[in-house]
Image 1 (tube, rainbow, N blue to C red):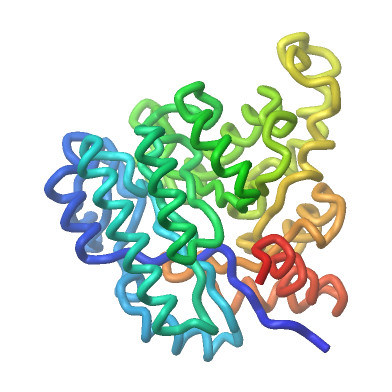
Image 2 (image 1 turned 90 degrees about the vertical axis):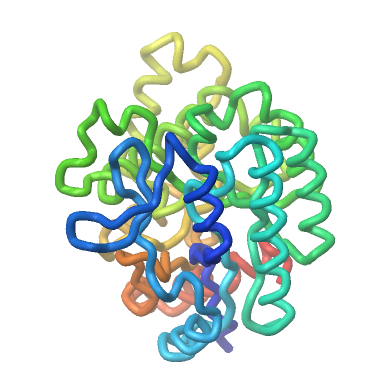
Length: 330
């Protein structure tokens, strides 16, 4: 008997959050139309979040879940999350989004769960909000692959990671526009979503591996968004560099590929062959979970699910249901 289809990578925003970025996000972030007239969030001249109607409408979300055959969504805010505006604004934005998601979960208790947003730059506030959000029903934590330009392994974030580890929570590592986007000329051809996001996640998880992060924090569960970005393709290269470059083995003795079997991945890839490679590098389907990236403009609730369903029945069931049920204790 198959279990529920659980979507672990799917987003919701609020008009209040957008208004706060408009007022407090500058000069780094701004909200304005693209050349094509699509209202978007910008970083340094680069559009990286297109604002879609489905991001604000929970009733529409449920209708689209019904249409696609998705039973449960674990929703999260998207980038740039709440990493802007100073301590009071950042904390207020996190509180507002966590409260909204908790409320929507109460409206749809059988259909919705949520990842907490935290003001990571302010560790004491972040830990307090983490504890409050978990009491309010949060089942995991969202973090961008860089936090306002700082690496996830930066010392100032250690108290937050320690608190998450004590609670043994899942953490969705989701890309944002990578630092240096202007220098990389990612404004050309809208390259932030197709390439920049993949750079951001790959750098973040690779740095965590080489830094010994996964040896320090053994209870939390890291989910590398978008099928691990380019990590499955680079697994052998990471191992070879660990063998041959002293800096790559300075803090870890095990091969990087062993750590790639300790993290989790979602199914937000757009080719079956990419999904199969991810399963291979992860060591099996018990490290993968269904994700859709709905309602981003390149999200694909039905397509991502169809690619999972094209696998053998046992593998598909593991990815759609079993892994998430265990990790999130659903």
